[in-house]
Amino acid sequence: MSYVIAAYGLTVGLLLLYAVSLRRERARLREQLSRGGESNPG
Amino acid sequence: MTDHTSSPWHRATAGLLFVLAALWIYLVWNAPIDRVQGVVQKILYVHPPTAFAMYLGFVLTGVGGALYLWRGDARYDRFAASSAEVGVLFAVLMLLSGPIWAKGTWGKWWSWDLRLTLTLVQFMVYVAYLLLRSFTEGSERAARFAAVYGIIGVVLIPLNYFAIDLAAGRSIHPENLGDGSLGEGMRAPFWAGVVTSLTAFAYLLVRRLEVGGLRAEAAHREAHDALGAEG
Image (cartoon, rainbow over all chains, first blue to last red; front, side, top):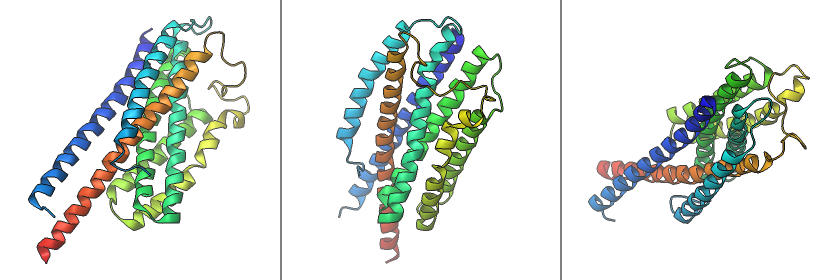
């Protein structure tokens, strides 16, 4: 049973980690772009 | 092509993924225990599905590369790079769940047979692709080279898939699934795993494309600001 838990746990865990890292990167870039937009309107 | 304005795609794939993942967990939990391998056989419902998503990622890398060479649109290049990155993630998942299953059934983590060795080679080929992209970000020449590399890399997919047939009985890896390979009650959790894995791939690819689009926009704005400062 421990092998099954390890296989599923690693798969789901790493997928979630990657999804969270993309979400954070997206938020950071949006923030950076919106700040740039404020400082350089037009 | 979708860029960072693709939030409806993101919401659609997220909702579908949630429903499919719940169904997949239910079916795996209720799947029958294999008489020969025991409960460790349930890794079947996660290991090949991640392999299918990996294959899809690498096919799309080649498709994106070909479209970039044909049309010269940077969005296709970003599509190829995003597909490769998500494909490599699924390759990692497959290369983790496979040895765990092997240890539970063969008694050892790894065997240098044709299928396993080709899988490792394929993984390294696409890691090299990502390294090339990361060292040469923004270069058109590198994008063209990466496109050719990604198209050539597709050759490894059928080679990997049919490695067991090529090994002609000398492979320790189980044969590819065919009619009747799955026992009673095993088809539904298996195909639910495949569809869930491909949907997870789509969800992550959409997210990765959004990030790629935003990165390109930020780089473009930085270059524009630098030119403005010089002028």
